[in-house]
Length: 305
Image (cartoon, rainbow, N blue to C red; front, side, top):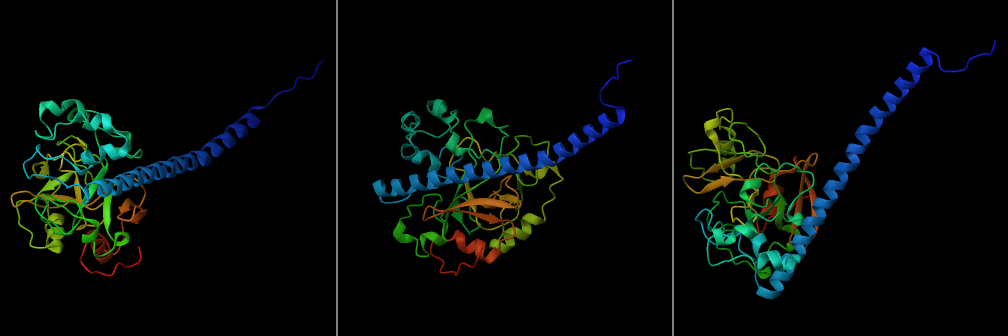
């Protein structure tokens, strides 16, 4: 009789168990590699925006405004003004800056997705119907006033120059990132959503406290402000009031807000500084240091971060 060769059932089960263990070890490693690659690409996008800002200043001798007007859906974002310096002249030429950002004449440009404006770690885009999305927001400052002058670099009516950044460009934030809103006011997204408060905060600390007191389980307190779309809209600014990945609140009856940056990067957000460098800032950054980075001429001492 010939002897048959092959695996026994026990041997087969052992091999399957080993393969399962190897897959279990491999999946987290692959996820970490993907996460690191997404964070790197996000940093590169911000560096491109930083270079565009410097080139814009060389031509116009000032930075673009964070927004021109306080009227919703009329103002244009700083990103829209930077398009020619991001090799997006064709899109820029489609924009009519003499009408509102949401005017039908600007529909073609408004709906275009621009890869440089998207962080690859945020794959959600429930706001596609509103226009091309962006994860990158301009720093307005540390003042709770959202629709008026502020102490950052990009705010309503701002005409800031390099000479106005007394704190130094390496100590002043220009842009950071923010998660796209989920587009669903029936679902609470604690980090991505903006929550409404009818109160009137008197300073940054008061804004944080009043925001923390909002009952976010009450859907009536979820404000339908879809941050992230479209990129052409001047609403896309953030503030250095609450720490990164903190709660966002709009005190819109008095034109105030606390709108921190946010991301899917583990533990923090990418931050573009005025000198063109990009730093990863953790959620646990000292709040004094965080706010010091948000001002252009506050005279604060920026600590380690």
